[in-house]
Figure (spheres, rainbow, N blue to C red):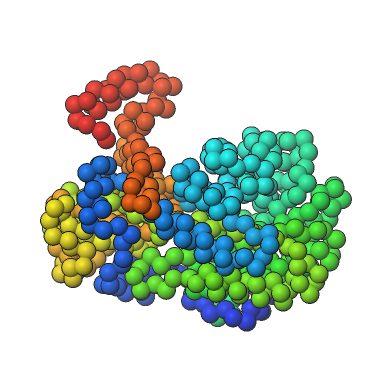
Length: 477
Ligand SMILES: Cc1ncc(COP(=O)(O)O)c(C=O)c1O
């Protein structure tokens, strides 16, 4: 299992300190007991009261100032690399208002589908501002990426051939997705097991791909890998960089291919729980620089540009869901039923993921944000699914119906993963600007949106009429 990993030089980096990075803190993972520490909010109760007077709950709220700070920190951490660029992973938060903020920092966009390409185009991205990183790709998607002259990250050599057949030519620069196989390890922990991942090419396939691409006149390649998600500690990027740099040198030596860039993709984690240590992006940048100087520079490849495709790290901590307690229920557990549900945030249902919950209190009432936890609740949504939960057995201050609650760290893979099960409608998105003003950057879905695709059936028109009448009688949503 580990032979290929060893071949890629996984026995290094010097500065790595890892937690077992693949263990995400979950709502029920007994290995990681729940903290009762508070977690700071990026808004005050007063600001929240103003916001809920303007926008009805539930809604996603994003902190523009926080997103800007993170973009600045990332650029500073990798400023040593002349060609450095972040391609924001659009799947994490596909809202053009958020993408526009990141574009101001020179970020490009990592897209996986045609609608994501359209979003990138809408904020002015073109050509190599876009990294098209898809798998199992339809021809129409490749044609769309080719029309935009996007950089294309190929998941398999067959996909390069398929692209050429679909588009009629090959791109001048081609990115190849790496899968080293085996376990992906740093010096004191396993990050993940690429061998079980559907993504990327084996080292043997990469060699074959590079030979074929050089023979077919491709000018340069890039290497890409995403080998773990939501990693903790500072070790993941340096370990990945070492692996990809080593592979870049090997491929250059064995095939003569020119390696123009290495794309470290996403995967840097965020502290979802109050006692999770945040990653130190400066330390990460420094450790990647050391790997660069140890591996690429001696091989005469010091001109390689470094790319990232961070999603969670860029926007995750800078978003939250503002929701309201609708009902309290006591059976074998005490439940707080809120007006948000898994349609707004699927991570707890999908991964048993931990999201911190702060009870803010009733508008106009006492500020409960710093009150000690005196009760234990399951915080749930209204879907007909028992896994529609934001928290299990969570110690919180006493909650009353009408209280505002905040679900933290939902700025990435939050609304974008939402769905419409049970006919639940997804919530609005609000951007809080640094001066305290706010804008609605996506309205809440309406029943008419939910029925829109039924226009293919004779019921479409009738449902449109019913939805309109209900909006008048019952209010939206
Ligand atoms: C190809 C690719 N790049 C980047 C990302 C972003 O990852 P993260 O949000 O963990 O940084 C993902 C996430 O799934 C991905 O699939």
